Length: 83
Image 1 (cartoon, rainbow, N blue to C red):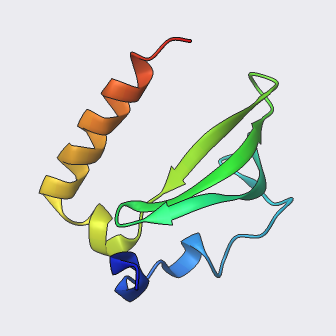
Image 2: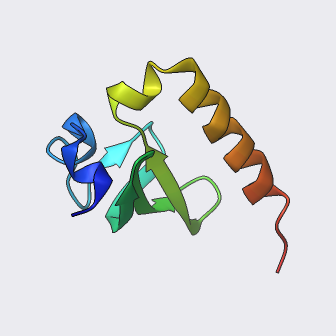
């Protein structure tokens, strides 16, 4: 059993559907994965005109200051990657 199976992902699963536009620029294409820090969707970024990954956090994580700090560290590391 995946530890994240016990988390309530709320809108990150039930409220979003493929083809939906969020934040006035991202079109949801499909779920790439899920874990303890949320769900990652493949999305089309209309501004950049390319696919990107967009992570949605459950409220349980979003409201936890330590978890948000960890997510920020993870994001900074990801942004430093080049290939």
